[in-house]
Image 1: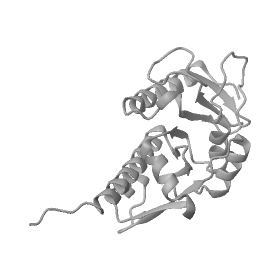
Image 2 (image 1 turned 180 degrees about the vertical axis):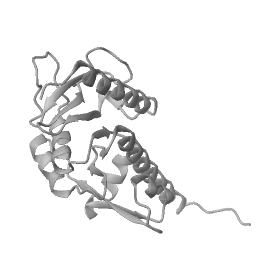
Image 3 (image 1 turned 120 degrees about the horizontal axis):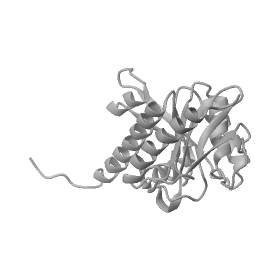
Length: 215
């Protein structure tokens, strides 16, 4: 299926908006992280960030279109992000996913290390769980955590084994989070909800060791 120029430019514009929003929050330290938006299902094609770019800036060579094998669909000097294969796995395993975002923050790295032994981070009764589309009273979630394999196909295979439609995200030990949604807006909302929950839990752990003033 041939993509139109309008389709490409629209995807790139939407990625620009997300990228700058996350960059202002310092979620892309050292050019880390990657973003994608799905364009077609059959065949699978998606726009993804190019490797090694400064994500605090906008240039005409920030993105390219790749297929289900994470390979560019047309000749280009750009290289897709090294972890593009993970985006492809998400889109194939979770068909309703239309956007997938990956960021590195202190919060998600600390959570992934603290709870790696349990292979999941669990939290219950927090309002921001609703931001993940889960509206049950006193709801609980368990975000899966996988080992940070240097071999990307091995990492992608590990992620494929644990992700489900119920929890729109996966943590990689000391390597950030991937979150997705049925639109770029929803994927952004999911990522923001996850990051709030991680930060809340870390602050709560700190306060447990602080003596509160007498009332």
